[in-house]
Length: 276
Ligand SMILES: [Fe+2]
Ligand SMILES: [Fe+2]
Image (spheres, rainbow, N blue to C red):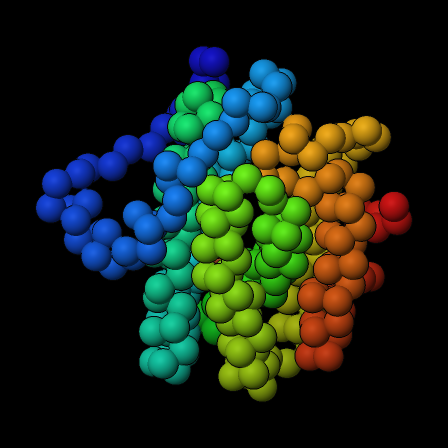
């Protein structure tokens, strides 16, 4: 696959030596995962091909989320968010790098990452620099945490429940553990930030949440519905119909409900249809 202008192939590396040892000390649980417990001898070649691209795409999404967490952290510091709240958010980028490694190593075990090219200059969307620091921080938190992370947690938990292969289950379990704190963060942040925002700010935040939800719903359309999907063909993801049902329910429960409770209503600004 040749990347288009401005795009690069999504390829990753580890530096190794003392740097890797420091990293392993920070997150020793990575090496404790059952890496040797990986047998895909019963998987069909199609299932293995699908797993390579699913786990490469997962590594890429974790990589993007790492950038989103880092951008949010910078905005929180600029907004002079409480030190303890900022400190809490400072570990998220590291968590995401761990998730990148886990997904990429899994793709490697399936025979190597699938080719994926992307534009590194437009990895994530940033708020308008003319907005106040607090509104920029709130925009990033609402998009990346109150929608992105809050929605991915129930889905990851569902995939963890559905996973049969021990290594895949352990990897998903590790990710689910870290993500629980990420999902709660957005709501904690707004307990602090909400009073700083007037009606106009809340409208801006509602529109930003709607934009993010639209993008998520667009991605659901790309999920192929397979009627007789067999367990052994799913190497770390849920059956497509259960996935979409859970995703729609989670959008209502984990995103709309808490946003509405905080006086932020993205529903009038959505362009995507939420109907099944
Ligand atoms: Fe993650
Ligand atoms: Fe996360």
